[in-house]
Length: 311
Ligand SMILES: [Fe+2]
Image (spheres, rainbow, N blue to C red):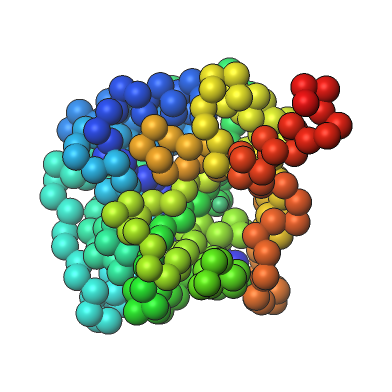
């Protein structure tokens, strides 16, 4: 199901860009790109000039997410629809277009507080993509960046976020998750706009601390082998893990989550299920994973169990 748009990039603000930068390069294994015209450090996933940018600032959070329209017609259509529905839309300044290396740029408010940058013409890089960590590269062709997951803390925000994604931006619902958590219930909605199972997901954690909106970003790679090697890299460098290797129930992705120096997470995964025009599996899930994805304390407990030689 191609709706003429793709997740394109993420913009991050960090109190310690150098530390975050070495995590992105050495642990996640992204390819450093050329600094942007506003001085932001950038990273690449593919033939595009930049897919992640980081600037220094007080927040340790995403400050924008980029979505790219396939052409000027889709760009205008969506902008008209969003502003017609009452979402605040502002034209991007020429300096911002230069810094993001895009042709057109509009900034749209979102219910989860991280502005959406609606763009066309994300530039190609001057040099080919090459990474010692991902010889086959990332899965981006026709699917864009991996995915972004943001957190909302109230039912009103969740409803507004779903409306924004479905009715405003024009994404389609892939499926959703409902999971009891403590005395409450977590809800997550997964949205697609091309063959990737989800380019955006919104997690509603009632009463959650939403001082950090970005829960995680996902990068998809072609083979489980690259996921395993990234997992080894995280373990070798003593990078904290949020979740061990596992496989998600809805999109089938085999992945793990490491924790960035700013606490939001990075999921690296492969074997993600794709959705087509005939997608009819829009349903509720009652579990996040079919196997694995244990938090580290559960894993440590299992490894220190009665059969461990270190017990
Ligand atoms: Fe994810």
